Image (cartoon, rainbow, N blue to C red):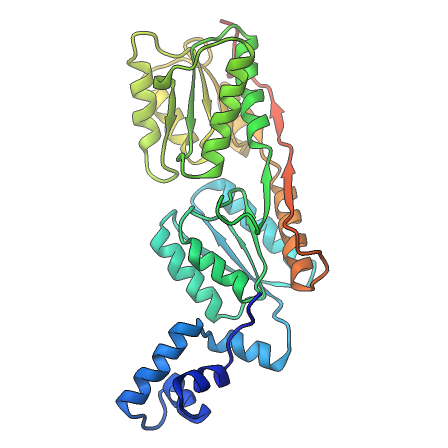
Length: 337
């Protein structure tokens, strides 16, 4: 891997002295416009990060981990952040938390900020974009662990996730076992690994039972906003609406349940429902919801352990893939057809 550029590297490429580069960076002292341009061009070409470079020159180690999560209004990510912080503290590590709000532009800005803050490692839930910026972290020897989602093009990055395919297949089989053949699924966007894999699990279960897929019942929804309500309304308006529903998009569970309540759809008499993920309220509402409980504690534990081991160069370079099984909780929101 390419080492982080130093201030000396920038000076050599720009053909100026180290003091000139320092004046450009700090805004102190006069610098001729032409030389300033040369320095700025060299900084861009070398992907120079002053703080990261200073850390490398001093041969020290950063004990700060950048945590870049998708959306803290989603209870899953809020709980994940809490557990990652706890795991980091138990190892005397600090966490610098930022959120992308599922926006690739904000993700790009956050990655640049975390580079400037000299993080020693990164745990992130990628939007699926900004591949070059994520690659830059690896090029600077900053370990990266993707949690919950990954990016197919970055197969050298460690990944910690649940068994998405198996979990969605289990949820779908549960409904098939109760006589449902018209089963809908609301997934995350199909440009995310969680969205794709949970649909794959759903399709796998249908194939096992010889049930044909109906494209009108397979509906992705964004992670933010209320689009889940529109998706459910469209399904219910079909000539043959679903009798079973898997809400595999954790961010849309409350939206979907609110819409079903407003439409006076009785659960499970009119529609059997299985949801990802399990929250404290899912067993308190009536009826309590059958759910796929994601092992957030284990996701946090493995993510912090992996990035910490990478920061200390305790692991061989081959990427790790940690897939943690989820727990299926049968409650009263599903019934026999």
